[in-house]
Image (tube, rainbow, N blue to C red; front, side, top):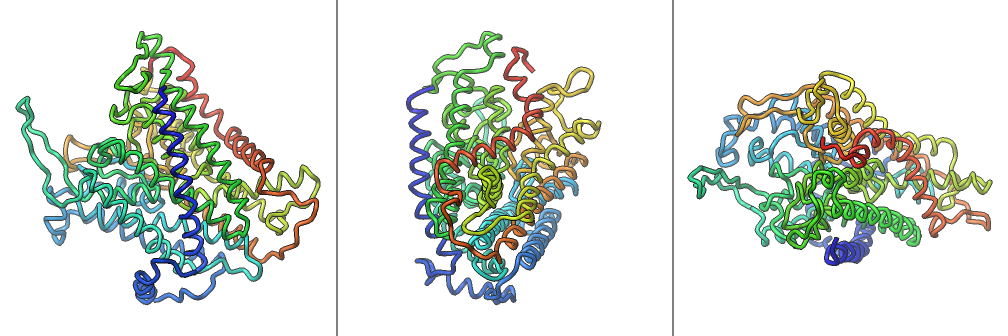
Length: 596
């Protein structure tokens, strides 16, 4: 551990907060239909899009109509992306957009990939630079990065309207929300971010791959491509799917310390800003501050544990005689699988950021973390996207926990639970409870199925299997993390677990592992859209409720007492659902001197 490392973490938290406050105010204006400084420029394109889509954006929708529009929109995006990926080597695709003539991946891997990008997961069983053409990257994956992120944000906006609504059952119009989210929020920031990244050396071209001769006389192929534009929305939309297989550890995606810091800010800026958006739209900024304090406290706690664990090293390293020492200013510790450009602090902070959200981008190998350090991403995912979480997803997830905490708090003081003047009844609590439990249910069910079946064990790396073919703690960790990551729409991996077998270069002759591809695809879709439907149902249930003035006995939800209660509920739910599984994998590895 070093002073510079701790200073980086503290500076990041301060800069994030300073940027999130004005962005939260701006997004509140966007969602309430107020004029913003971009209206003169984007007002015309906005109206044109409504005409092209032939929708009445001024018509208020109830939660069922809103959900129907969202599902139809997502299904259309799924079909279009599947078509693009399955025909990337078709004769009508210009050579410049597929210069290496990459063939389409097998149907099962394509099913998994399409489901992944549609759900904002961006789980990748393939290597981007050896599988996807430029056209697939730009017209397919990058477009879905915008749209899937937009879907998460509009659900959060709809839930806020339901919470603060005073009459009727309307929660907004999906088509207006998705258009305004993409063109007023995601697109402008992405353009600026892409220019910043390109100025720092992130690739932005359509050139053929380069072939060079190394000093040893061997040939090496260097991938090219339109990376900066995809990298910007990859981080901003908490998508996480990399243009290159090594993701943000690749110097063409993340060239230096500045871009590393900048990309981390991109990941959290919208989730953090949306918390302040909620406070403004609810007319109670203190409640926004209270929720922000909860998530920032839990976030910094996760960063501290990961940083300390990695700086200290593991019992297995110490038993093997690998003692810590100062390595390029990192302060020593576990440098296995880490970029020396970023050191332990930059790696621990980056991987915590991308696992508390639904981003999943990595600048180091999570499977190379120590047992305790590797348990932190597990714990972050076990919180089910409430520590900032994905764009939109994080806000509506923690608001469901707020509802549950209000209910529990009301029972503790012997009063009917009230939230912003609305009485909470059995229907809302049941819907919120189901929305919260969907992700653990999906992750644990898929892990059990994959672990118990021979088809599932085919995806585990040989090194993580015992001689008898069973799971070691590392093998279980690989499987559990894979389905936990996919259920949380995160996309990061504990490595080793695969669903695609590729040759050394390209994808001709590659084949998918059908069990992992199909189970993972359904895991991602079920865990994405079921909570969305429950969140919208909660919005619909609250939208028409009558508001009553707060009384002397009303429990406040904007003070430190409620913040502590909320943290307790989040930790309790996460511990009850996931702690036994964590004991079987990363925790047992962290407490043993055995090298798996």
